[in-house]
Image (tube, rainbow, N blue to C red):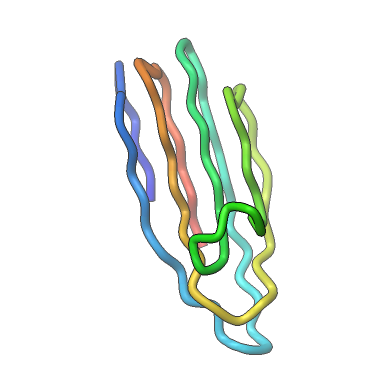
Length: 89
């Protein structure tokens, strides 16, 4: 899941299925030129138990490892954000 844009407002989301005993590494990248962007990765879409949650995310790269079996939601929310994001696995 990725986008490169001059300006993005709204949200995008996708899901990943993690099988028992088969962890998934999600490579995450953000480029922020201006405007806020938030994101989370949560099992069973339960944000209170997020594997990752970020707000007003600056330019950064990192990896999130999903270990528990289940369906994970990756969601990005932005308002007048200029830049890009990428989640790959």
